[in-house]
Amino acid sequence: MADFSEEYRGYVIYVQVFNTPDGMADIWCRICNSSDAPLSFLTGGMTRLGGGPFEPATAYDVGMYYGMGVIDGYLGKDVS
Image 1: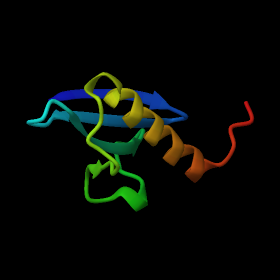
Image 2: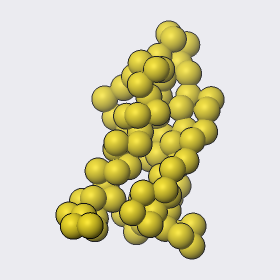
Image 3: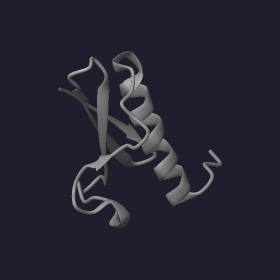
Image 4: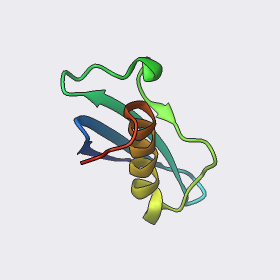
């Protein structure tokens, strides 16, 4: 298992990558604001990404792009 986090547009994306027995990876994400409270539609903790298992080498990127997409959908277009 590997844990990663990155800040994006005022939110923190937490990504956990778990190795599967067949050499692939499962991805779990959580998105929190600066007060560490999850976004309302992600309450309950980590969310497992569907469509896997994923290649371990790209699992972190897939998780981060997923989180960025959720935040962009929630906040709208970034005009900065």
